[in-house]
Amino acid sequence: MVDLKSLCEKVCIVSKEVGDYIRTERKNISIDVETKSLNSFVTHVDKEAEKQIVEQLSVLFPEAGYIAEEGTSNKKGETYNWIIDPLDGTTNFIHSIPCFSVSIGLMKNGVMILGVVYEINFDECFYAYESSPAFLNGKEITVSKTTKLEDSLIATGFPYYDYGKLSPYLELLGHFTKNTRGIRRLGSAATDLAYVACGRFESFYEYGLSPWDVAAGAFIVQQAGGSVSDFNNDKNYIFGKQILATNKLTHENMLKEIQHFFDKS
Image 1 (cartoon, rainbow, N blue to C red):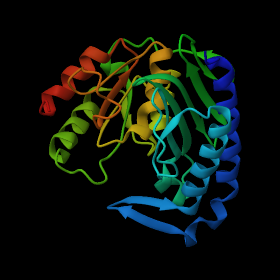
Image 2 (image 1 turned 90 degrees about the vertical axis):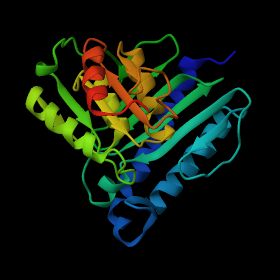
Image 3 (image 1 turned 30 degrees about the horizontal axis):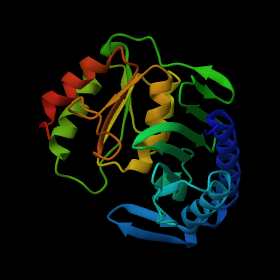
Image 4 (image 1 turned 30 degrees about the vertical axis):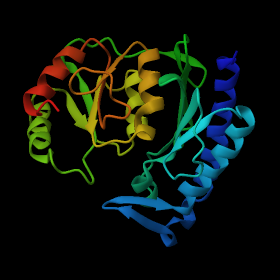
């Protein structure tokens, strides 16, 4: 039987060590940027950080496989798989905008059981494991108690390759701008989700995301007392490329507004 508490503590250490590496490499970034696809970038830092994570996790938990953004390992586990984003917020990193994270999640038979998000610039490690509360640097955290959308601060992200729903997205953005406390776009979905978990945001929504962007953060939100779904209020938010994470109290109203502007698909 896996000791998830001990494993989570070790994964936090891994994320911080890799975060230290990422932090020290910022000065070298301008000379080494590759374009993976439209507005999707990768650097030697992303690749090396993922290599370091995979090497350390392979020692901690050899039987697990990997779903990793940069494809460092193609190993698939029969029961357990790590879902890894070594540097969530690469565009921010390239431009020296201080919001980017290491995101590491563990899935068992398709269900998340552990998540760690380490926001590098503020040295904030958010984490949780199955049956545990959510934590930030060792202190328990919970989602906010706000009940009304007009009192909510909402986070989102702009699509960077899938523009098929750009028009309804912008209409929804305008609606929330007028009817909430405000909209924020940090540029790191993992960080956005962590901020929902600790009550800084009431909700976060976005479409066009990948599993490694959301898996760990979404799990932490749930362990902090929040709700997570796709735009149809189903559970296909890790692989379904759309996510709504809230403090639970605003979930129904957020979902209603999103569905009003987006086709159910």
